[in-house]
Length: 200
Image (cartoon, rainbow, N blue to C red; front, side):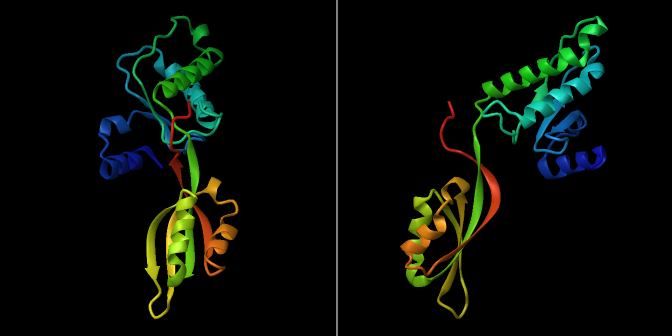
């Protein structure tokens, strides 16, 4: 997406101010991910000389984050100030990339990071007689029912729920056992969700 179109989307859809959108340095990982770096500095000398190295450090951090070396999601870093050595030889990638990486990791650690887990959309087809057992099977596996739909003219119901992937192993047999074999689930990846509790 070109910068003008990106600015228009961020201002119109998400309420960003136009000036901030024009100071986005990069997204990560791979230049398109859900994480970004924004330059909010004022009057810093030599900043453009280190931009590529800072972006390289950011890409590294986004792929190997502070918790479990996993890919980061939903992180935005504002660069407020940078103090650089006057000698060009001390502003090379060998010095800036690891330094930027350590700064990004330290910033994330002070912001109370959390682990995220993948979540399935679970669609269960079942007759009304066993709908209660389907609900209890979902809640026992940390699932959350989001919708139920009756098929007109039939006793069949479709129950839609979010189910953590970690709880989905053996869920089909667990559900069928609790419903006497009358419920049929389908699982499809839906989104990432923050895990409960503090990882520390």
